[in-house]
Length: 363
Image 1 (cartoon, rainbow, N blue to C red):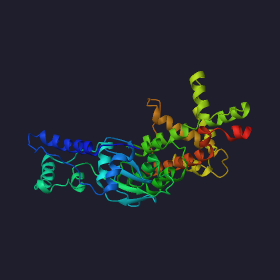
Image 2: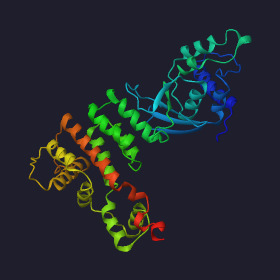
Image 3: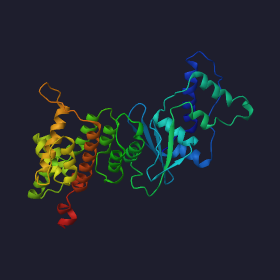
Image 4: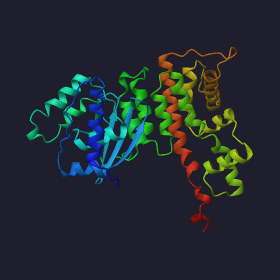
């Protein structure tokens, strides 16, 4: 349990405000200031809550606050959601929630000197009755922060990366890319209902990027993380190894400089998936696909890998593919399907001892 000092937090907060005013050679009365308390529970939360933060950029940040079996999720730098994830409920900003967000996330001070001075003065006109500054007024001086209470039965509620990804997908309408609603739904499902082993920060990094190339590459990287699985699964079956595959991959890479061949591995990984997304990839990239084509998975893998190379390798001899918004959306949805299906099938093998070789099974 954390053990913060409320007095020190207030001194830091108001020291920041007074420092900004002092930069303009405007005098501020030297007096003690604090944020008006709400109640005993809120005051205790300010000092004892556990906080997890996720800083995605200078402006975009989230925080997960845990206190007395309750979870609170805060977001900074994102638009409001028209439709929230099912496990989040809007709540009012309290002194504790604001103070923790400001302390942990270093909220940007956005107000002018005049605005700061006005709010400081407005609460101090009658010093005899001063009982602290209202959190609503103080919070207006900083980058806006919104808070939500997390339903205790919300499956992803304790994972800040998954919560953030779910929220960002639903609040993305004004993002830099023309990501269609059904594409955002597919991406959101990766965070909400596709298991625990997906590298969520990689997906989130792609969604927050400013180019389709970057989004595609981040989704590709999620598949790339599974490349050791087919070969190492074969190895474990032959040698009855009882270690998680990611540990074996790390050892082979460190001791033998081994890494799986990308083109071959992508084909094998996509064989964990259904043919529907593979056909969508081929159609989006202008390939002819017929029902008689029995090599759809291999052709799709080669098309994905070729697109990846055309983005990664910037050479005169490398042909840059021109892809429209509609086709990028189709590709993003197909890649999301690949990720969800592949990780559902083999994601746990990377981090868990294969059950057929576990100590319980051997016993």
